[in-house]
Length: 623
Image 1 (cartoon, rainbow, N blue to C red):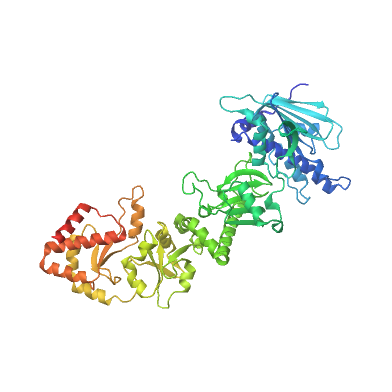
Image 2: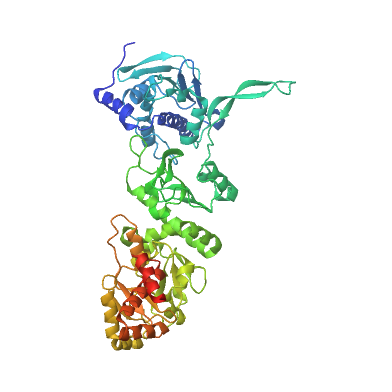
C-alpha cells in the first residue's frame, strides 16, 4: 500500500515534537501509558450511557513487553481501540486529539476524566524509536488495522489480524549513540522505575512479566528461574482515599516511600478542595531541616499530578518561599498544561490552588501552635528562621500572613513565645515591645542595655537570629504596639530628667570624649538605661549595631556603619575616676576614654580595630 504523507505543517510539528517540545526522552512512556488509560476510560464512560454494556474492571489493563534481542518495546491496552478512520484522523494528523474530542462529546456525562488533550503525546515515541507500529481493533468492530511510520516521511495503514479489541503499540528502539543510551528502555527494571515515577497512580493495572526465582522442588539450595506477571503501579493514590480509611502510619509510610525524607515527618496534611479548581493534596512538614535547605542546590516545590499522572517533580509556583520546607504533592484535573504536559501554564487555577495551599499550611501551623505547642516549638526550632525571612522578604508583603507564626525567646518566660502572647501580658504603662539582639541568649541576657527595661519589670524579646531585627523593623508594630530595641536612643520610659541634667552638667567632659572618639561615635552622653555597668553603646537611626554586623558580612557591605552613641553611667564609681582624670590628667583621660569605648565594643561583640594599641593602653595604667 502506498505511503501516505503527513501534511506539511504536521511534518514540521513532528520535528518539533522529537527535538524541541519534550526535554526528557523518558517522558514517552508516560504519554503512551496515559493514552492507554484514556482508551480504557472511554469504554467505561460508554457503559455509563449504554445499559446493554457492562464494565468488568478485571478485564481491563495495560501491558508492557520488552524484547532486548529485537529491540522492541510494546505497550498494549484492552481499551476502546480505533477504526481505520480514527487511525487516519488521530495518528495521521498531528495535534488531532481523539481524547479531547471524546471529552467534548461527553461533557454531559458526570466524571469524564480523560488525560489526553492535545493529541501530540503519541509522537513522543519517535524520540526513542526509529519505527512505530500501531495495531488496533475498535470496540464492537470485526476489523483491525495496522498503522506504521518511521517518522516525518509518512505512514501506512493496512488491514491486519487482531483477536481482541484494543491497541498494541510497538516501538523499534533506536541503537545506542554517544549522546544517549537507549538500552534503558529495554530493561525491565528501568521500565518498572519509570512506571513508578510517572504512572504509579494510573487507575488500571500496568502489567509486565518479571523474572523471579524459587527453590526447585525437593531442593534446599538449587534455584530455578520463572516469569510472573507483576502489577507495576499502585493504582489508587493515597490522596484519593477517604481520610477515615487512613491511619497516621499510612501517611508516614507514603512519605518514606516517596523519599520526601529519611525519617517520619513532623506533621501530615490531607485536603480535598472543590471550587474554581478542584484538587487533592497531601502535604508534609519535615521533622528536620534538609541537609541542603540553605544552599543554592535546594529546590522547593510540590509534585504536580494531573489525574494521577506525574507532570512535574517540583512545581515551585505552588509554594511561597517562606513555606519552601513543605513537601508533598497536588493532583488536579483543572490545571492548564502546555502541549508537552511537562511545564505548567500560569493561569487562574494555578494561582487559586497555590493560595489555598498557602492558607491551609498557615491554618494547620496555627492549629499546631494552639493544640500541640511542644510539637510547634520543635517545628519552629527547625524552620522558624525561614518564616522570619518571609516577613522581611519582598518589602514585607507577607508580614500579615506570618506575624502570628513567629516566636522569640522571652526574658521572663525563658522560653519561646508569640507576639500575641507578649502583647497580652504587657503592663498598662508599657508603650513598646522591647527586644535585644545578639549572638546567643546567654550573651544578650547579660547586655548592659537591658538593665533599665528589666528593672521596670518589662519583658524583653531575645533576638538571636541574624534576620530577627530586620523582620521586626519590617513589622514595625504588632497590635498597634511599636517594636523598640533596648539599644535605641529613646526607650520611652519617661525618666530622662536625671540624664538630661547630667548631660548639661558634664557637657565639657562629654564633648572632649566625643572629640577623642570623633571617628567612631556620633555622640557621648549620660545613659538613661545603665544601672550597674559603666558604659554601653546605643544607636541613632534605623541601622542598629546588630544589623551592621550582618550587613558587613555581605558583599559590598564594608561601608555599612551604625550611628553609635557612647553612653556613660554617671552613677558608676568609674565615672568619678574619669571625671578626676578630665580635670587633672589629660593623657590619662584620653586613655580612659579609648578604653571605655573599646570596652563597649567588646560588650557588643564588635572587633577592636587595633588590639596592640588596646593592650598598650592597659599597660600604661598598670605602671
